[in-house]
Length: 211
Image (tube, rainbow, N blue to C red; front, top):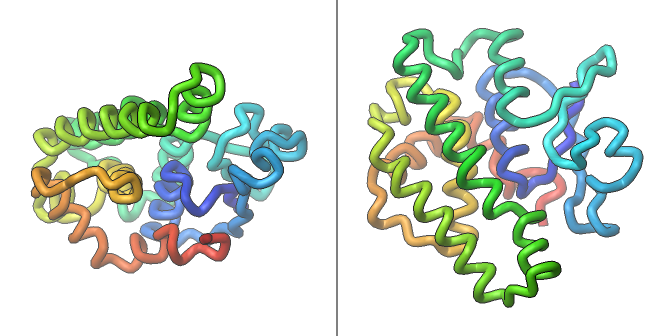
């Protein structure tokens, strides 16, 4: 397998965590989102992923999977242990809900292509763009703080897709200086995940393209 991603992409970070938790090997090929106008927009990459987004996972037969949650579902199917979607249907629904709240409601609104549009097309200044980003991050994380039940991970003794999505979002929150002191459950989950080698190996700071 070949994983196309960018060290700072939270969507790519999710897939790196999932691969590491399942001890699945993938050759990593960095796609720089800023260099040369964005390598993800180049024709060679768009032939693999027409959306021009990372991550993308290329399988041995040339099949390319896109969208981080779809890729994680695929990894759960080919390597069921450890399960990232719990067997209990209620817990599974709760874990998916947190993952979707991050991947669909928080992350896209603070994503690079959105903030670039705000500044380039709508002419928002940097301060207004930062306020936009922090507003949506805060609103989403405040809700997630109420949804999770750390024990020590979001929904029990093992990481689930909720933890796989939450940790990269916390990385983003810290990167943009969002205060987290009023989110003790989120901080507790983040600390528990930081103890696991898989989460440490997937961290942006230890990727070979880190800047």
